[in-house]
Image 1 (spheres, rainbow over the protein chains, first blue to last red):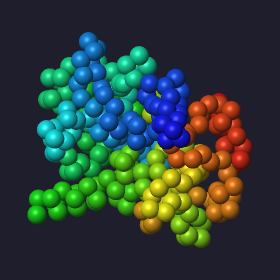
Image 2: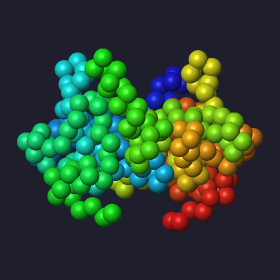
Image 3: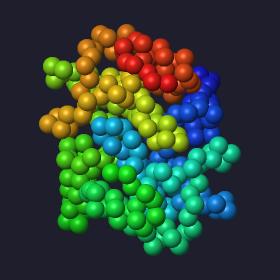
Image 4: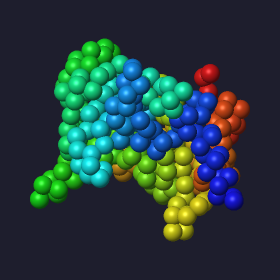
Length: 131
Length: 131
């Protein structure tokens, strides 16, 4: 009973489907990402954040491998994500083909995410970088 | 062999102990937090991030309950955290008593994190809020 109530509170207050501004980092992980037509593109595995400033810079997406094993990870600039309160998830203005052909790496073999890498990703998606 | 190499890459490139700017969100979770004297205060369970802007606003700390069960969670403003590359963790200018007497909630029963709540936390720690 107490546990049910605690779960409900967590869902209500800090889920992506809540009206609040903030969400727990471990709730962003696993959140669905949709395209403009409402088709599910994949999900956010985790996101890359500036250690000092605390600013999220990339969402790292997957298409969800078989049995959750392996598979490729696709970093997309955080600014491409639009939060959709109705869906309780994120929407990106991308189709699956664009994403599939985009920069990617094998799970567990992350790149250095240095400025050269950043530039490649931002250029691919046509997102302006400001550094 | 391939797996060892993948693990090494992940450790080198995106761990808190790496020289890179960015860290994976799921690596911040679990990271140790130290006081100025080098004593471990606790660890970051997760962090609260603005759904839209992607800005981390709170680190949610715990002292690590027995067997990882339950225990209280302590939100502290993200700006209080200083990243210490030598320790591979975060340092805060707090002692354990100040933290223990600070705002907290039971694990799984997060508050709404609305502006009133924010104000209480920021006032307690003497951190300036800019909204």
